[in-house]
Amino acid sequence: VSRGKIEQVTCKRNELLVIFTNELDESLLITFHNAIAFNGVSTIGAETCGLSEETDSNFSQDKKHIPSVQNKKTYYFRASNNKDIIFTIIADSYKTESI
Image (cartoon, rainbow, N blue to C red; front, side, top):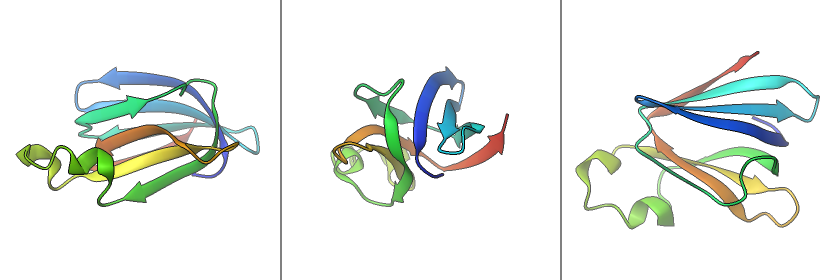
């Protein structure tokens, strides 16, 4: 997922849905499967550098004692202006589709 803006975040059972507009002004639905945790700071409306994946981050390190976190991946969005992480999701996987 390239640069763009987070428009909306919705929680469903076992899924986290993110509406994202990319730099070509295309709307995307990003569905995170079996999401167990997420954390955001000034997320909605934020311009981002895109979506990145990390198998081991500080966010998940703090929760290693929880068995359900150990086999998950950590996904995150960074702010385009200062590169700070503004939205983190712990989930099994994700898929992207145009809407």
